[in-house]
Length: 424
Image (cartoon, rainbow, N blue to C red; front, side):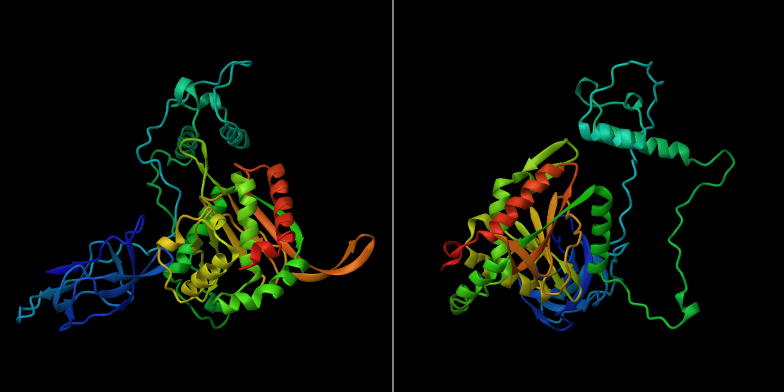
């Protein structure tokens, strides 16, 4: 009987084996952890679905395997002959292979109508589709529409663009078939000693997602500063009580509370864009993704229902998820479902920066390092600690006015946190 790699989770069908806990001759029980596999920026422990004595192991750490791969075979423990060794099924590509734009495989080149006479009525389309067409210099009247009443949908415009590209770059008669040119590898050792370090599966996933997010979302970043002088004093008054209860009261935990309260007032920042149906999805939950800097790359575990939790609960969960992320024990499910992300670089240093929106979210908050600066208050210059804030947002969904109002309210929420919100 064979144990095969089970499904790893939604959207995950392959991974890299990190550790194997069994060898030939071992006795395995059902539900016993038998390996760890790295997939989708997480390391998951996989339990056995079968029991018996291991007669053969077909994979090793470092192998890239797909769902359904034979991991090991078992007998009944009574001297059954070992199953014949088999070459492990290896995923055809790395876990996080670079993403290319989806090709319209089933797309039939449309019959392109002639340009309409001047003064013709333009076809129906959403403002975002119109803007995209205008930016690309495409006349919507030439785009075959599939929407109700002849409405040009986003998919129609994309298909039309793909058609234009296929025409523009199609090989001429007699030419050899065009082939994809692989990325060029530069021999940097010609100029001096080098050291090559293969990208880990996590690093490849990060690279793929950052490229996808940057290319898909028109980013704008709003900057401001929050006076956290009072917030630091508030933390100082309560930090000992939190420690006695087993929690670390950090500035980040306090800001989570302010962010959750502000998102309640500005639900558009807690939304997602359903591009297929041209819908804005306003979520009735607030799940905050917390970017954690680890040795292997950036992980973003999620604190769920942050708006329903006390500062104490937020502080406890923040510490726990951070530890699990750094120890690579965070589960794939704990990395999913975020509705708004916070990236805090304050412990490292630096001021304002431009974080990349974590699709399918529409906004992300970046926190820099607080610095003491001279501030004029009531006509007097005072030293105050100012915290740099950077809110990047998807301009397809959020306008500049929305962003300005959001960050003004966020600054106020941070500066107005009081003892009542923190007291145990």
